[in-house]
Length: 79
View 1 (tube, rainbow, N blue to C red):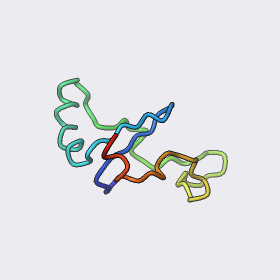
View 2 (cartoon, rainbow, N blue to C red; view 1 turned 180 degrees about the vertical axis):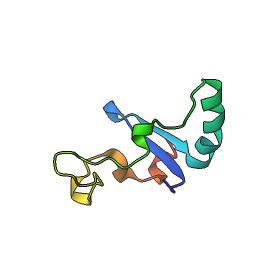
View 3 (cartoon, one colour; view 1 turned 135 degrees about the vertical axis):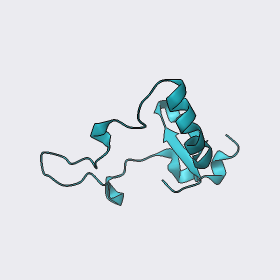
């Protein structure tokens, strides 16, 4: 992700918004503090391939589920 913010959308319209640079800077310390040896598990190092048809699971615009992202980042400032 190269956007300014990381946005995580959860059930009941709950959004968690983190500044990407701050989250990246804090990641190494968090991993060390909690004894986590690597930022992602081995099974997440490669792109996901659906074994049923063998194509990469990159979402196309028509495949993206409806979300609250239509409000844009300017709308998140007040939340």
